[in-house]
Length: 221
Image 1 (cartoon, rainbow, N blue to C red):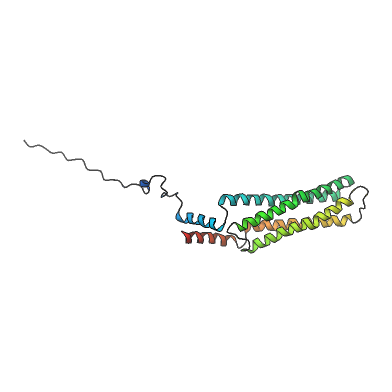
Image 2 (image 1 turned 180 degrees about the horizontal axis):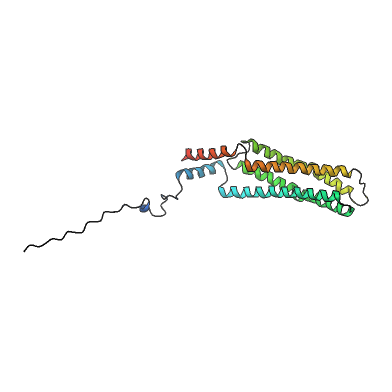
């Protein structure tokens, strides 16, 4: 009696493992792992003394806070100057100039200095550089101008106004100093607006720096 042989089950073909699976999820070969070019770029930043991304953002945020605070102080100075010029109360006028005199030294000059220092540090420790681009040079000159006008002119004019608006003091020439003080603060605000425009639009600089970053990363990778 012949026996009927049943066909054996087909063998399963070995499925190819997913790329990088044999190395485990933490092997560094997955799509999210840092590339050699990224690691080389980070090492190059450390060697060149540039800030890491987190530090750069923190310094940039502080620089923006200082600059915005300085603009706010100058706007307050304009408002107080107009109030002092238009009030008919001698006591209010004198108190206003006392407040302005304190504001110059307590907020105006320190914020201008901090804005300048943080901006220079940011340029030195980032790919922008300090003297690579014309807009950076112009911005630094404008900040120096703001500090010079505030410390050398506006503070002196406000002091004179404070003295001449005191009860019983000689008020001769007070109108001239009022106009000088308003003009000085107006120049400061104009310089700060131009500096802000340069910081936001970075004329002729943004494309060049981004190109340097891409080129440097590709060459190192």
